[in-house]
Image (cartoon, rainbow, N blue to C red; front, side, top):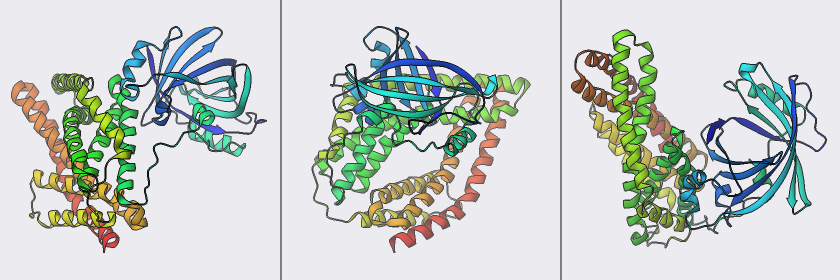
Length: 470
């Protein structure tokens, strides 16, 4: 199975559009037919996942595209007329009980140019697409794609500017399939009342979990695990902030299951963050220190592997799929007895945060600062829940809360890194201990910098909160 990160832009154009002014070298014109598969309710499309079989010159290739923080991950495998087992294993969560079926067949005629030197190659193509029903053309459209083939894509913005100047415009849909099918609305949810608003946000988190589950199973994109963890934690925080809006006998067992999943995701994600940071820090080490660091890193990587194995084992159990089934039903979750308006729930969360900050001593401990971060996150999620009733002041509060989270989050990451390095140094001794000591000192500097930044970031958040909630 071939995998690659896809970095591209798509633009809509009129039928007579022609590439001009980009220079470059013409690429071989191509014609191919793509058959897209999805569930009856378009679950893959709704999650930003694409599964298709492309046939060109009588050769069939299966392609699976997964959402990513930058572009998408594209997996490719040659095969017959049935989806590869390796793809189906990645899609086990979004599919679950549902069958795949063909939902669209598109014929694409592609021509274009390759722009830039060989090391920074970007292909800019015009796709003339026909949606087929049997042999009949049911609809057609034209779009431009610019895809990074080699390099970091530094020239993509300039190409986009030139294409827009030539008449291209932002796409109406993100994918060809979405353009042809459109997204059917999900379960009807009335967001005009607090319960409906909470249901909508829970459904959004469910879809985010489904969108990132395949990427976690694949294991090539750390951000997939991060986004799945965020959706898990946000779901639990929303249920906590609005406790009573949803019937407790539905909400509380779900919160327990979300905590279980979060407990599996957390250690793996923490090690992802730690390894990425230490790799950057270790760039200045050399000689014996560099070799000692490599030994330290190998131990951390082994811990991450063990954590990932435990996580994937759990994601294959009935407990995990039961959690997804429950969260899938959030659109119909039974209402509770709470009658409080959402802005008041958000204001209450802000008051708890202010109380926590006021209680901090002059030199708070690491744990006390981490507690403030937790309260900040809760206040932020409560404000996101109440967003329709808070207007611009609520949006500013959320932005300021993110800043405080980032500042204290940097402090917490440094604390975790220091603790891990100290434990590894105790086990390694000698030169390993010296290398760890150098890295520990850098973590202490990170902590000092974050502590210095916290008071000013808190002042901005406190001002935004008083504006939004008083």
